[in-house]
Structure formats: C-alpha cells, structure tokens
Length: 252
Ligand SMILES: [Zn+2]
Image 1 (cartoon, rainbow, N blue to C red):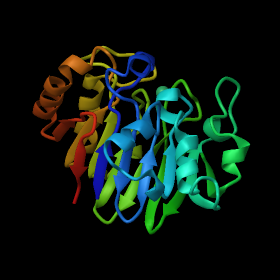
Image 2 (cartoon, rainbow, N blue to C red):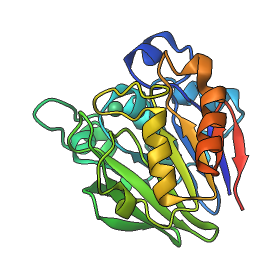
Image 3 (cartoon, rainbow, N blue to C red):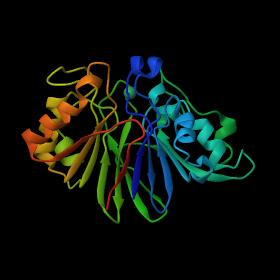
Image 4 (tube, rainbow, N blue to C red):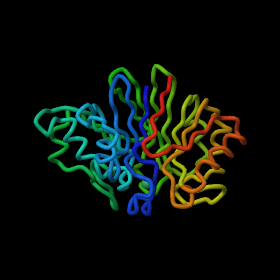
C-alpha cells in the first residue's frame, strides 16, 4: 500500500502560513482513504494529480482545522458531487456532532449523502473493505479526538493523531509494524496536548515498530525535522523518516 503525505505541518501557525501544508495523508490500497483532510487538502490532492473522486473513506481524528476543514469537499467527491449516496465518514464525536467548544465540522447536508457515518469513540472498531480499523484514545485539547490502528495485509499501522504522552500508549500502540506519529516540537520541548521528539523516543523504545514516520511539525520542528529523525533513529534503532510535503511512501 502507498501513503501520500499531503501535509506535514501541524498547529495554528502552520495552518495560517502553510510553510508546511496541512492536508493530512492518504492511504492508497484496495480502498483509497483520506485521513485528516485539513486546510488545503483538496488543493494538495490536485497538485499531486490524485483523483479525489476515487476516495472511498474519509477519516477525521478530531475537530481542529489542520485536520478537518476540507472534509466536506471530500464528501462531495465521494458522493460524485452529492448525486449518489456513497462513501464512509468515520470521525470523532466533535467533528460530527460537536462538543461544548468545537464543531460540528460537517453539515447535515453533507452527512445526508454518506452511505455510512461512524461517530467514533476510543475502542470502536469498523471495516473499510476487508481492512479492520480501530479508534484509539488520545489526550488532546479536543477531548473527543481519536487515533487509528489499521489492521492491514501488511501488518498493523498506527496513526497517533494529535496527543500528548500518556502511560497507556505502550498498550494502545502494541504490535504496530509502522507508526505515523504527530510530533510538533523537537528535543524535550514539551508542549501540552502534543508530542516532542524525546517523547517519541520513549514511545518507540516501548513499541519497537519496524518503521516510524514523523509528521505534523510545528515552526520549531521544521528546520530540524531531518536531524531529529536521525537522532530518534540512533537512540531507538527504529528506522525513522521525517515526512516531507508530497512524500509518497510504499509499505509492503
Ligand atoms: Zn489538534
């Protein structure tokens, strides 16, 4: 399966400035899935000559603009311009129903054309084609946020989404072969509700996947993302790749 990283920036300043884009990533396998179509995702898809009409599922982990703003456009693509009942939207409660502070991020009109809509809580499982997906807990400023674990023919792939470190991570991410980790800051520069590089080292030493891809960088992380990937790799023995905007990655 192929991963396409449409955006590797994260947080408000990256969304505003687009120094790194904020389009989330796509999984191209038996089904085409768009994960976290944040601000600019539809433009990034066009620039990579990917056909948005081929999208079968949209997954939105939480209700922050760098993760959700283009979700409705991808629903329009999945439903062939709202002419067909089609597509799956699986998203946090905040994205679909809203909570006391955030959302909802998808209109009733857009929801009405979906073939399937799933309001996710941590621990929920569902299928996209024959691939199992599990919603994972997070600790983030959207309390309804979820991560995802994909049970693929090529092993277990985990996407942390935005979260700070929590003790149960070792159990939650267990048996991951590939991890996609959102890390906003370098070194030990802890930021509430997010991960910094040193916390990623802790996670990888516990989980020991074959490969980790770090993404969702903030302003302080962009200039040093490659060095930080090498440092994390040295300190863990896990192959670590710093995602770049537009990067395609084959996983077999
Ligand atoms: Zn967030």
